[in-house]
Length: 378
Image (cartoon, rainbow, N blue to C red; front, side, top):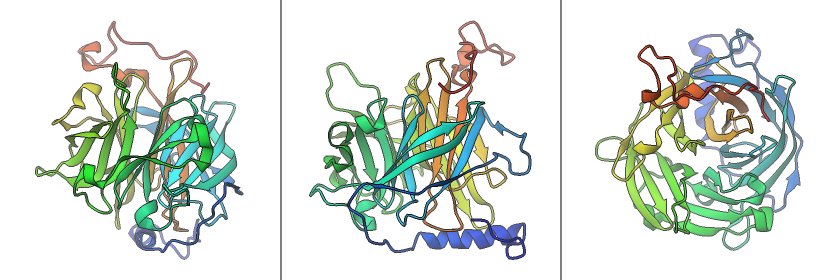
């Protein structure tokens, strides 16, 4: 929603006014649920990465590749906190912190940039009793990871905050009528902050002869004694602890595993004066181990000068030419002054090269992999 400039002056006052409304959204009550999958109306508007300069596509160590703003009159549209993208980039699956699924078909322009979305559907997440989840305590879904190339034909792992747990939904078998299988409960995690607990999760590489799924789970802002953010490696129902170094004022919102085994960590910040911020960190695979304090290189750090909002969901895919595409979605908190934004980036191949594969002057050495010849999504 864009307010007339005469009501919202530029500068600190404008940012403060919007921030106050954004903060109030966290206190809004939940409304009634719908029990069926529904097709919803969807209006889509393309956005520019830099509203003040259409030609500016700089995105740290990534390349901006399009973004869109999504709106719907459906009362349950919003709050999208977890994200998965089909391996061919054709569709998305998202979960909201009000306990809903969202799916839709993605569209791209002639340059391969994300340009639209259609055929959107929404459905409630079900509880163990087969009924839609209700109330913020039970329905606060924050993280999403799927075990196959097509999210709708996969098993979906969903992490929940407040009543901290991880459930698995067999979407491939039962679709949105799937009842969850509890994987981890509050007793496994111990005491976590109510609204800063389990926020992000991703699937780890499977181990030989181990049937149970392996998960990496990161809290938003539950600290260890040293002030770092608590995290867990789960093998089945067995948890091992580790921590992620805090990059204050940023806090984790999602994490994904890259094709080479490394990870991307999405983080956000928010303040009344500075507004929203978005950060991406590259986490090396060998740093994620029990007992470790994990840190990584910052690939992207942007604020209100770019078209961002409360960025919470992250997904990644690799096309047949080797290009790695990164998607992020925002949680609008059901606030008319915030936006639901879906954006896409290309991760530069040289970014994933380990330090020893670069020469002293920073150029790529002999072990480096050259960039794909065609960087359009496939």
